[in-house]
Every structure is written in C-alpha cells, then in structure tokens.
Image 1: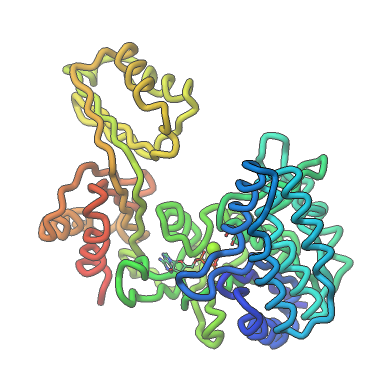
Image 2 (image 1 turned 180 degrees about the vertical axis):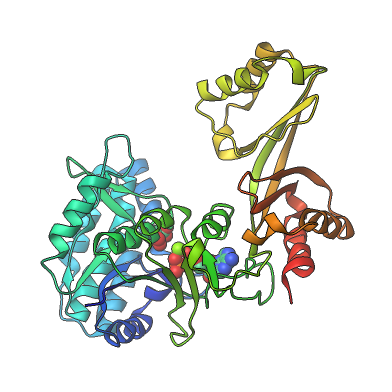
Length: 438
Ligand code: ADP
Ligand code: ASP
Ligand code: MG
C-alpha cells in the first residue's frame, strides 16, 4: 500500500483551529500514515514561536535557576488541548518539563519539548500512536546523525505501527541525552522518516502555496515553481530560501522520494514537486529562482605575481583550517584572491586570522569588506544559454547596485553575486523583475 509521510510546520500547528484543519487533511487519505510535527509557531505576525520561548526559558534558568515565564507555554498548550476537546491531563508533563529545565538549563532539551508536547497532543487527537523521536533518531558523539542506527530503529519501530505521530527537530545521543538539529530541523526529521518507511512522497505542509521563484517577504506575489530538481532545491535553500531546511534533501534524494511542498491553508493547491533531475517534465526553463542571505565578509588579498607562487592558496586555507573556519567562495584573479566567509564563522577571530594570513603569504595589500549579502540565481538551463550572467549584471547595474563579488558555481547552474547588505532587497527585486517575472 502507498505510504505518505506528512510534515506540518509551525504555522500549521499554531492553535487548535489550525490543528483541526490539519487533522482533516491527514484523515482525507489513508496513505497519510506517518505524521511529523513542528512546535506551534506564530498565530499572527507579532506572536511568539513556542521554540523561541523555550530557548528563552533555558537562558532564564541558566541565569537564575528559574522559569518564571513558563506560564506562557502552559497557556498555549492549554488552549490547544481545550480547543480540541481532548481529555488528557497535560499538567504533570508540563510540570516535569519545567522542573527539568530549571534544574539543567539544557538548551536542546528545552527546545525539543515544543515538538514533544505537540506530537503527544496530535497523536491523542488523531488516534495515532505517539513515537518519541529520542527513541529512533540517533546522533553520534560528534553531533552528526548516526544514519545506520537511525534507519534501523525507525524501520523496526514503525513497521509495527499502522499510524504514528513523531515529533520533529530532535533525537538523542547513545546515552539518551536530547540533541536538536539546527533551526527549522523538523524538515529533516520528516525526510528521515520518509526514507525509513520508503514513502511514495514526502509531503511538507507549510503556509505558502509552494516554493517560489523569490522570497515572498521581499517580492510581492512571486511565481510558484511547479517543479524543482533536488540540486536546485539544495542551492536555493542553502542560499536562504528557508521554506525547506537545506539538509532535508539528503535522505530523500538517496531514496529518490519526491518532496511535495503544500499549503495547509489551501490544501487543494498542488504546490511544488521536488524531483530527481531526470524526472523533470519542464526542461526548457533557464532560470528557476533567486535566493540570498545577508551576513558575509570578504577578505581580499592582493599580491603581484600571486599566480606563479606555488602553494599560495593552500597556505591561506591552512590558516582557516587552524581556526576551524569554513569559507563559502574563493574567487581568484591574476594577482588577487578573495575569501567570502559567513560572519558566524568569523566571530571574534577575524583580526587574528588576517594577521596569520599576512604572516603566511605576505600580501601587498589586504582589504576587508564587511556587511555583504550573497545572492544566488539558480537554474539548470543556464549552462546551455549564453548571456544569463550578463543579463544579471546589466539588471543590477540598471538598479544602481554595486557588485562586490562574482562567482559562477562549478555546477554551472548557479551565478552568485556579492552586494552590500543595504542593496540586498533592491537586488533581489531587480533580478526577479529582470529575469524571472513573465
Ligand atoms: P514552516 O513553519 O511550515 O516550516 P517556514 O517559516 O520554515 O515554515 O517556511 C515557510 C516560509 O518561508 C514562508 O512563509 C515564506 O515566508 C518563507 N520563504 C522564503 N523564501 C521562500 C521561497 N522562495 N518560497 C516560498 N517561501 C519562502
Ligand atoms: N520548532 C523548530 C524551530 O522553530 C523546528 C522547526 O520548526 O522545524 O526551529
Ligand atoms: Mg520550516
């Protein structure tokens, strides 16, 4: 029988009214056997996400051993349980969670309880079994996913249950200690479960009608992308199209399981299908979408005759390795080399790194450009279409944007430009208008 795995994001679980809608979606198809849920998200734009509140509680506990604001968590879940009319006493569970956060101030444990409680409530409401992610999603001591053990445990546990609700976002180490994925990680849990049960499709239910050609918070009503390859998804998600976690693609790609991004609030809309490259039906498209992120720094090194100097780049990379800093791009010219690095990687280390690089390669000149945003224009068709890059540059020139860096990904399906952060929104709008709006 066909099996679908459905993941519902934060907005799709925000209150009891939405959860009723979600239950209708699940019950409308028998194949929707396994459900992964996020923690309740925002009900309106100024609202707080449960996960953010839980991180704040862990910080509060670390500071003074108390969780005075825990009542906000209790209020949200009480509304949900009462609104759904479930007869389940959640107070002892809430009390235990509060005491544990106060005692341990453990961030991962605290954050994971949003999904844990929500999955318990969902399971009760749907009449499905609750399967705790801590039992079946396992991490190695170095924090990476222990794939072998995870898939083995997931298969063993889920093969015995007809229907289950599994909390997203977390798992545990071998000793049982809770560990979360990075933010937005419920998408990864859903993908792991989809692969484990060999689902025919991984449905990712969110609050928009699919993956769009640009961030809808910047461009008004961007076009919905009907179909996307795994690689295009990876490039766009990594570069900032946060609708899916960039790591959620790996489990399903290996198993060739399509992802269907769908809207909980318009379930009849077909959404976006993410499929293997060779299964695309629309192969004429040149550009698929644009995405970007702020928060990068460029370190540019200039030295005459750099190109002839053996080991120049390798000396620089050794310095980065020593400081455990990874870089995003390294465009080079005849006498120049630039490193584009995420600010989070450089925190508190920039001065020391620059000093060591100077000592290692003795450049004539070093320039640091902070506050850079990267923008990726992505599409398989680029490789065979002449002039895409020049069109992007002309569009940005017309919009009065100064391009600080250019890099064409080696995959030939990605052109990346670095612009000043103040020009970020303007650049996305310009590229959308110039290359993506029909
Ligand atoms: P969920 O809580 O369901 O996981 P997210 O907030 O993580 O939802 O992701 C959905 C949001 O991603 C949308 O509401 C939208 O604002 C944002 N977004 C950013 N870029 C894109 C894009 N290219 N296409 C669609 N949505 C995008
Ligand atoms: N609740 C977590 C977060 O807000 C995980 C998720 O929603 O995917 O990041
Ligand atoms: Mg998300």
